[in-house]
Length: 337
Ligand code: TXA
Ligand code: MG
Image 1 (cartoon, rainbow, N blue to C red):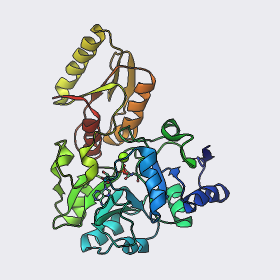
Image 2 (image 1 turned 60 degrees about the vertical axis):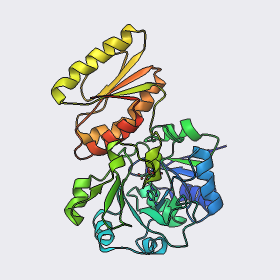
Image 3 (image 1 turned 90 degrees about the horizontal axis):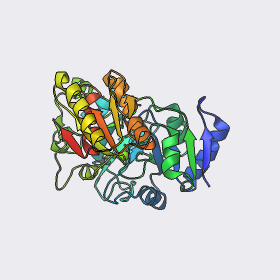
Image 4 (image 1 turned 45 degrees about the vertical axis):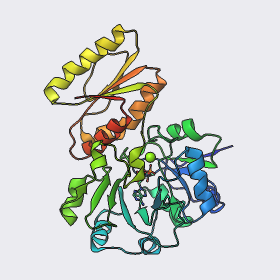
């Protein structure tokens, strides 16, 4: 049995107390954040955190982000908070930014996948903040079965976890649609481990140049700094083909691919920023912000409509486009350049 709590109209104290109870009892609660839905458990309770890995089918060496609601909790979790971290926290929290810092003993090894660092973020969603404030710091990966597209609607969480976790809080669509930006501040140079909801350009305005980890651009690495980098991610059931390249040529490439796969008898779906003729179509919007909001939903939606092949239009890697392209490249079986 899973309790589904409706908080589409904002935080309700009475309903919230049900979810708080689950967290304090070491159970799993899926909750909305401004990026995607998270699958939460008490970050300081080993047994509870283990349940996250079991439910998701997540490899034990892929560490979790600890979500906090009070600035003081950062120093409770992190052994050192360098000046860059101070600056970023002041400017961007609560918000879609995760900082990797040296961890304190307080944080169990299961939470950090055995690493001596901890990833921390303060989410900007009122429901998430209230849940954490009334309970404890919450470890939460995206609330999807490992390898599936991240959830931006409570329906997506229900698809993956109904009957398998204690509680799901439904607050409608998550406003940003891609996960937080992850920056490692535990080594010499600030390093981007995952582009996300906060554009790296904005971060550089505050702390200067940020090194981009090579795995971010889609190259596979042996021993990844963010262990999540080495697994295939976000993939729909259909075969996903990502079409990249100069804007002027993308249209023709997509049209040709649709024709090719349809002639072989496949049902073809397209997700793009402008209309295409195909068996199924999802409009992603026209700006980077809109595409970020719709990209994961588009993948799940086309799966539900039963297509065999999804052809996705690539966008420019600026602003949220960097995160969108990172997710699509990881999800895609093929890239057409
Ligand atoms: O927006 C988000 O960040 C969402 C919401 C729920 O807050 N959470 C999320 O969690 O995306 P997850 O587990 O799906 O992705 C966390 C990423 C992974 O790539 C993981 O490897 C990396 O952060 N990570 C976590 N702790 C780390 C650490 N100590 N060092 C390096 N990378 C870390
Ligand atoms: Mg995830």
